[in-house]
Length: 415
Image 1: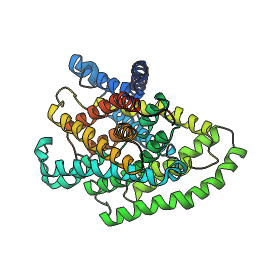
Image 2 (image 1 turned 90 degrees about the vertical axis):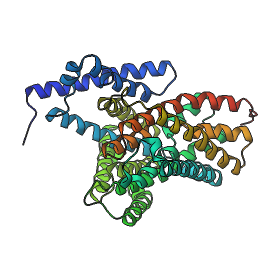
Image 3 (image 1 turned 135 degrees about the horizontal axis):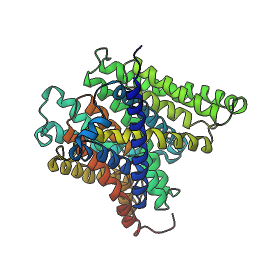
Image 4 (image 1 turned 90 degrees about the horizontal axis):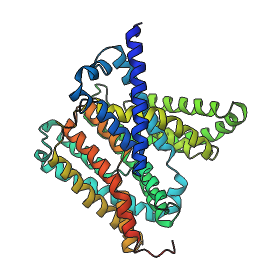
């Protein structure tokens, strides 16, 4: 079996040291400006990547982050594990009880705010691919579905943080936004699983109908039978094994097993990790303290590695395309906001409450970045489109809080 040689071990350890150190520094800087840590971590990747370090000191960049060799392969392995774990904790945040409590209102908001931007993104991309400089007509359908999905998804972790900062998390409107974002997460990742299958990168990929049935079947099975098994096993783990070590290790073991299963049957590993996270997070035997430990472990070690790695393979200056960026921003700020606002109005909310919901649901973030990174890796999109997605994510994160705050000025404080 091949092993890392002496210099490759040193290089790998220095890579991890530099990435985690600068990632933490930039994350703290982002927090100073009241932005999520992910914004700072992406900026750290841009600094360490070909955009800045590669342009000013290319020899240091090539020495620190070689594109070939054993250390590059091992680092890529770390990144793949990080993506799986990120989707696992995204699933942990989906509280199905909140979804049921919000009922019809959450269904209205989630479905309309999913359908309107998806259709808008699909139509623009399908009929005007030249706007995106997209020339691969063989993948035009998949590409149109991809852009529609990016427009439709709401970043649950980011919007939750925004609601907490505005002190409206526990209000009726706050719970409605959270429940709607959870539904969109579930539906959105089923759609993305179908898109991954349609990319055809895997020679053993399933037919589209089989992918849909297996995705839905796996989701239903895990959220019923699987959740029941987890509820029976967790009390034994909490009682018999060392806490929190036993819970942490076995939770991640189940996550990796679910990810491996979906990868094996031809569905991307991240889908399995996400659904396992939903099933585990919805268990009454998983305490908030246990969730927080899992979150802290993943968010502070693995998450920075993924978000920093984004900037290591792209020159953001050469890939910056203002036209594509403006198209995505217009789609997001018109159709995503419009869809969520209409859904909230249909659910009985007032005009300004509905507008606040619209701007809140337009918060994009981690999932879109992961989706884009996978699509870039699979050759579905170009560097220009990926950079445009990142810019759209950052702009919507920065804009959501002040726009919601403005709308809430006109809402009575009885909530």
